[in-house]
Image 1 (cartoon, helix red, strand yellow):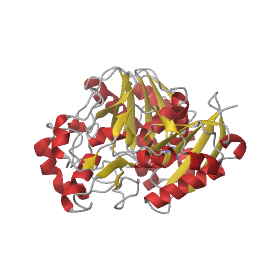
Image 2: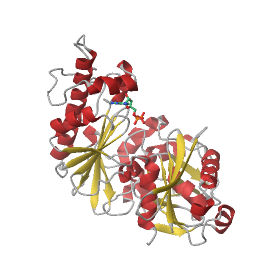
Image 3: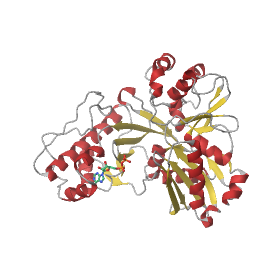
Length: 417
Ligand code: ADP
């Protein structure tokens, strides 16, 4: 019996899932992250490893790690972080966007305060890193994997997209080298799932992992969640019905449209095109608790369309599928009946989802054939039926939605490489 192990480092916690060769979960562990620091990540990694039963641990074939997108850190030659990591939600890089605009191609996806390239340039120019020191700049997943394989600095092309790496030509573009100071060493980029090395001897001995256990290149937490779903064919998509509405569609063609915040990740021979609306479940939660949502939904007839036309936002501003920073939430008129009100909200969110997939297709993505659902709203069968009517394709709850499961599958895919 062999197992593959995936680790997910998310915004509030870290999880590990071990699967067997049939994809069945054989062990799992989780821990909260008290802070987002390299020490906390390392302790969480080792804690999670210890929680996996020895019977499983001692037969692990491959390990992969996902991390939050655009969380980056600089380290020295020994792999020691030289400053606190710059986290996914850090906006300080807004200060250097004009500088980035002057060097990057127009509308490039790195021209955003949340991109790792903007964060790196901000850190270099603000004195955040010690000057003139040779440094490695890594993403969170790269650095955590380094703890296991010991090679500096190797990254994957999912995490590296927002660093400016070109997933089409599979290299860093020339303009990037002009922008980044020579003292900064960017990670060598490989495909997610590529075997990087076997486990470091001291770590393997300490946790009783097999000496030939492979550490493979990881991915971002949101792509890991996509990988957890069965979607693998062009036209298949995953809608995440969490606090916000996030759409990811597998496409034969690469599409990028900065106006709508649309960009594509390389996904083997395909492209994973995505867009994120600010509308979503957070607005449902403003009005109803989760139990109430389930009970009221049972009373809705999903076959009849609600005449109510809302735009459920928490605050003004939308990027996708309409780009309008001033777009106001529209939640009136509210009928007396809560069932009718919820029907209107779910129907309106389904229309936004439909418009989102339309927007991806209008930009050139492969037409939608099937949608898998993930997130808090995925189990709502009434909503699935409404969505199926609005989208005109089959809507199925994804049997697995955890990022750590997707990362375990990624480890399995790389086990033989
Ligand atoms: P996130 O991780 O983005 O915060 P989750 O995936 O945990 O979100 O989902 C939470 C959301 O799911 C909440 O906004 C909640 O309103 C919504 N939700 C929970 N239960 C249901 C339900 N039965 N129907 C529709 N939405 C639901």
